[in-house]
Image (cartoon, rainbow, N blue to C red; front, side):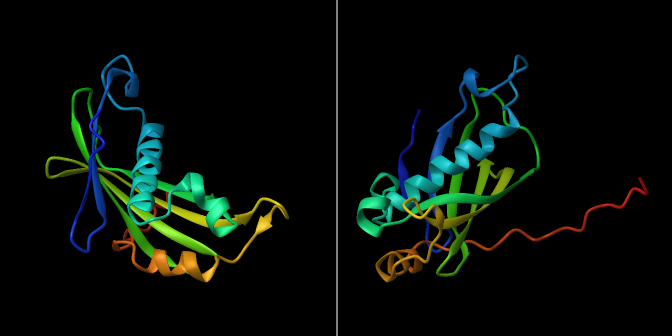
Length: 158
């Protein structure tokens, strides 16, 4: 699996992901939950490239990140053998939470967009926490991506 990471000018950090049979159902279509997992890997790679390795968060910044909310918008399925391009970046942030977006594409076609709201968490108090200034400085340098456009849901009358 190629997980090489390269910078993409002002539009997130990118990595490639080769879809294996283990990522798919018997028909060779990627399970929808795998897109959330791929987004997590891409986000972690981006954070590591920016000097914030996830495994060092507690020791360096006295906080951990926890997922508060995640949303995936699937556009079309990926198939076994596809090489996917994952691009992750911050959409918005505050001292308490960071919103990330990961765009998953195959060649020029968007497969899935995953947005995750990540909160700072103090494992000692087991409560939400403010991010320290040193972490905020690094997050401000993280590549940016536009948030997903919210599309109104269809009302069915049920």
